[in-house]
Length: 259
Ligand SMILES: C[S@@+](CC[C@H](N)C(=O)[O-])C[C@H]1O[C@@H](n2cnc3c(N)ncnc32)[C@H](O)[C@@H]1O
Image (cartoon, rainbow, N blue to C red; front, top):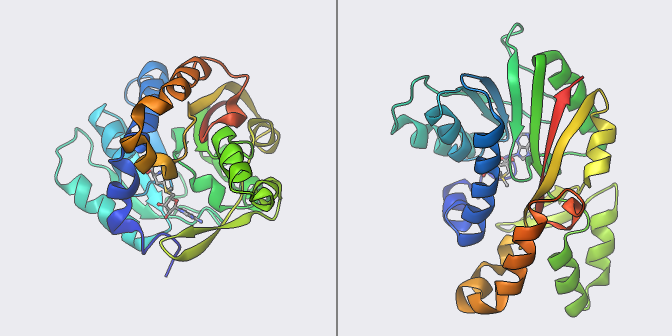
């Protein structure tokens, strides 16, 4: 059983349809709306339950969505089969650790990975992914990745308050740290924007910015004490407009272009 199989049927309730999940996804979607040309060929990595594939297909793009988890692909297939898009979304199994596609000639305008799929692989695998996407992108193609950084501000404050300094240290480690996903321990690696820029060094960085400051485990607290979070929402709204503090977010979006 692949990581995330057990989570697939609950993923939309636990993240996609939560306030924090919805808010962060809106930031990513607004960015895509602003920056994508029409009618693109898009390869989506770690597509999960198909939320973004559906959004992109509804915008008229041709999408190949992929994931390693069979159960996630099933959820995605169910969601996508209910909607009529100009180009039907194609689904394929693809493991980020050893990315391959049977169609050896397929090339793309954009390779997209949302909400931490790339945090599931280590630096060596990211380097292999760099080679794979470099081969698969059309001239002028781009990468848009949404990744969890090492220095998430609220995570740091929360762990300090809980006296869990080790957890802050573990997040900095190249070997990664285990994160509990529905009882499964998933090895997770955190990257700040400069590390991604260094690994994907044949690309130039067009933009990076936070998608939100608040980790999803604050969802219940937000529901109860929304007013108390107001200063954080305010800070978030300011930081979303800058690239200086991308490593403080719960996730950051990084947009890279083929040189
Ligand atoms: C946090 S979810 C994000 C899903 C989706 N992109 C979204 O925006 O909701 C992470 C996804 O990464 C996938 N994943 C984890 N490790 C992977 C790997 N080695 N290869 C491909 N996908 C992987 C999981 O199955 C899961 O669907």
